[in-house]
Length: 155
Image (cartoon, rainbow, N blue to C red; front, side):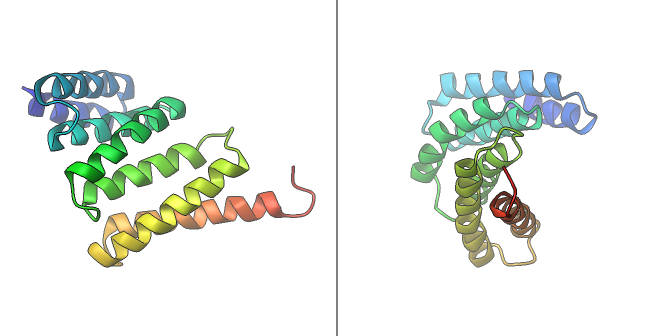
């Protein structure tokens, strides 16, 4: 049932029903924690999906809090170069820099996170992989935002 709910949430998301998708992702995550505990790969996957849903709805503080809690778990449960860890780090960086209230420190943390994750993705997945390429694009955007903040006359 949880796999079905996860697939249905993905379908809702693809049709723009982000709130419905988020409710299902939250329910799947809660049930995975109940069934398997926090230190299980399926729970980590559910947490990643839930965090992505939060970020899609611009609920950045909640997404960051969930990822700060679950990324260390993912590192214990999975290998460092695992695709899921890389995408969690990308989602975390996005929650930092997509926020209109992002501070200079947020942008710097996003850049550092993406630099490290993209380096690992390039080594593990290759430069042509969509995740690696997407992280590279996000990193360029963060660096541009940092340069704009550092420009003379910027606030």
